[in-house]
Every structure is written in C-alpha cells, then in structure tokens.
Image (tube, rainbow, N blue to C red; front, side, top):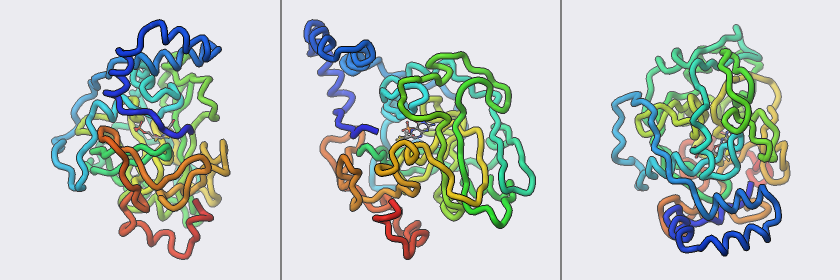
Length: 328
Ligand code: MTE
C-alpha cells in the first residue's frame, strides 16, 4: 500500500480545474505508459462524487457522534475507498460498482464448527442491527469517523457453534464468477476483475478467536442508516476499529474456523510491512512512513494517532504480555 499523501478532495478538484489540458498531456507523456496515464488522468480529473442510493435499514440517528470527533461525510465515506478488486484508485472505486450484484448473497460458515452452515444475507439482516460510530484508521495514514450499522460478529459465532479447538477465524471476500449463492458477476472491473491490483485475490483476512468475539468487532451491513454501499463492502463486511483498516475485509462470503493462524492478504504480500495483528500503534512505524499522526478526511492538518485507535481501554487486555513491537 502506498502512503497516502494526497490532499483533500476539494483541493484536488480545485487543482484539476486549475491545471490545463496541456500540462496534463506533458505529464502524461512523461509517465510513459497507458496505465500510468490513466491513473494520472483520474488524479487530475477525479470523477464527480457518486450519490449512494441504497435503501434505509433502520431508524438510526445519523446525527451526533458520541466520540468528540465529527462524523466524516457520507460523500467522503462513499467516494474515497480502498477496494482493490475494483480499482487501486480511491476515487475510482465508486464509479465501477454499479453492476456489483449483492443479491442473492450467502456467507458460508465452515471449518472447525459443529455444523457448517450457509447463511443468507436476509437471515443476517434479521439479527438486531445497531448503530456503532467508530474511528477508522487506514495504515496509509488517513482516518474517518463512520456511523456503521451492523451486529457484533460474536452473534454469528454463537450461532455457528465453533469447536473448542478453533482458535482463529478466517474471512474471505467474494471474487469472480459465481458466489456460493449462485450470483453471477460480469467479467471485467465490475466483476471485480482488477488485474492491476498487485495483490492476490480472493482477499483474505483473519482474527484470533478472542478478537473475533470482542464486543467491538462488528459485521457491518450498512452505514449512515442505509444498506452498505457496494464500494464500502456490500452487503456485509468486517469492522475491527482498533486495527488498521485493511483488517476490515469487505464483501465477505466465507468465515472459517481454524486452529492455525490463517494467511492474510497484506501480510502474504509484504510480511515485513504488514503483520497478522496490525493493531493501530503510533509507536511502530510502517517501514516506509511514520504512524504517529494521521490525516482525518475532511480536516486540515494532521492529528495524533492514538494507540489501538483510541480503544485501548477496551482491547489492550487482549494483548497482555505480548511484545506489540514484535507482534505488529
Ligand atoms: N477488503 C477487500 N476485499 N479489498 C480491499 O481492497 N481494502 C482494505 C479494507 N478491506 C480492502 C478490503 C483497506 S486497505 C481499507 S483502508 C478499508 O477496506 C477501506 O474501507 P472503506 O473503503 O470502506 O473506507
């Protein structure tokens, strides 16, 4: 993952209108390849922000954040995304998701469980949905405050009845072809066919069992009181607020219980840069940039990054006795 050095959307837009076509062509020639030119073009001419049209799923406040921090706008949350299956360009995801079919959708729950089960998204939406306003910190150095809707992952784990030897939970994102429910996606970018992503698919993630059972760990089905927008990981994604955002895997189709630490996409890709735990930690720099501060989307300047993203009181006990510089 590249360090996020880009400036606010409003500033980028202003810059784009300021730069003339000629300087773009010159820069494009220097970039030297069709792909780089495409990326540069999108950078200089960001697509207009997309409105999300998902249905309301509850009578949620949408209003005051119980944190002292202001909520990030719906527009920023849904137009500045990391979803490499579609695009590595954060502003390029929202324009590509229109054909992403999320009905029907099932999640296979298997591995070390009493009875492997296929849950339909409708069944999961029947579980009591709550609004949870969480800080969200990406490893790249930007952050948001997001009013999620969803339910604790522990509720699904209790239904799944894992065996006592299950010590970890592995997650997998939908990728290509038919998902277990039979939903077909067209090939190409809208079918999550991003061959330029540079990471292996399907995207996989994992948690230790006690992390997965922690009351803060959410399976999110929406945000801002609406069904989950596709670009944010429809129809259901993980949210682990004290870990870097890449642990919060999107569009989940499989949850498996294992007795071994499962592989995770970014730690497979660059083990010296991304570990299994990836707890937000201002004292452990990424090999290529500091993690001491972050840029809150929608704000100027940078703010200090908090240990465990500010959730230390709730979660530090999970790591008692562990050297978090070693287990990063
Ligand atoms: N899940 C999948 N399947 N693919 C991805 O590329 N990106 C991760 C995470 N989950 C990613 C993913 C990263 S790096 C971040 S920061 C968050 O999703 C971004 O979530 P958002 O777009 O809803 O802000």
